[in-house]
Image 1 (tube, rainbow, N blue to C red):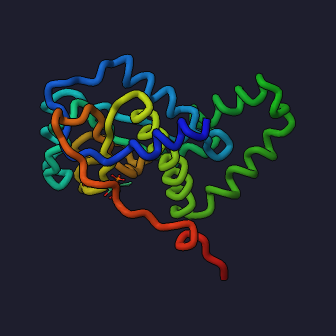
Image 2 (cartoon, rainbow, N blue to C red):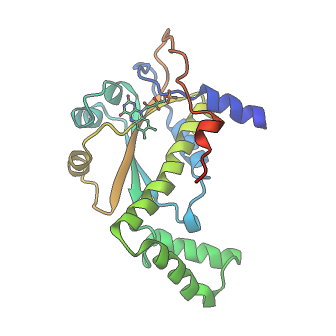
Length: 211
Ligand SMILES: Cc1cc2nc3c(=O)[nH]c(=O)nc-3n(C[C@H](O)[C@H](O)[C@H](O)COP(=O)(O)O)c2cc1C
């Protein structure tokens, strides 16, 4: 088990050059997203969505808004990863579905509704920053799962936050409840591409701090 994750985590790299002649089959993309859907989230609210860009015209529309990065048009699939800042609100369809599922599975009882509302509202309903943090942290975990899921299926990915948030939101008619943590290029490595050695990482001792 350990070794499986080790292999995936060491194999995943941000790939700049994709095979422009090899598409990602729809069923592989669905499997990738379904695997990533196992990501944990606060109260299981799963405040993430994806826009899937496959058409050349859509990717060409995106590229100039994303620092003109060639992988935006060269990768067969580009995902616009969306973080829903309102996913904790009472009445939100996912919030309510989650409540129903908790009742169905017996993890909550009807009379705990007030407790649940109070818990979610007190955590996320006190500032715009709290809304954004809720959306961004959960969707960040989801995005990482997407990348590892892709690697496990033999795909390559490249996350990008080099893009004009406002312009992408406007051009793709993305509603205001969403923040866009990243774009994710997905595809297969360009044939013959030699990767540079893996980049440096902070060590355990550089990561651990005390105050
Ligand atoms: C949220 C996020 C945004 C990134 N944005 C860009 C980007 O816009 N363009 C780019 O070339 N690389 C981008 N990267 C890739 C990083 O530079 C890369 O992950 C890092 O250098 C480590 O390399 P590796 O992913 O191959 O291990 C981004 C990575 C993350 C996680």
